[in-house]
Length: 154
Image (cartoon, rainbow, N blue to C red):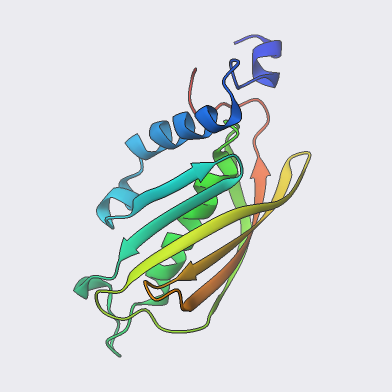
């Protein structure tokens, strides 16, 4: 790939189509998303919305969704939002706060939004709600873009 191609990883696609292309390419190899039954509701530039049903094997000793599963859902939405511009981006940190428990059979939805991007770093906010739109968790993620590495070849 030429230096110019590294700088333009869109191949002329409009930003929405690019985000969809990246989602499709990433999800082909995303065994975590597949194994947890996580589904995509939406993807756009700097944005992703994913959902997951709380299954019995996700429950902790108190009969509520283990916080790790909620975090995986939020982190997955974060990953798809970060990478939607087709430049490989990884998490450099995250913090999550739990507001309410996820209950058995709840459908949790994580919505990730790009807040700020400058150079190689970015900041994203993720909210997780249940099917009643009750806030379950909030996560803030920091990202780091790997220079010149496309997520998917176009």
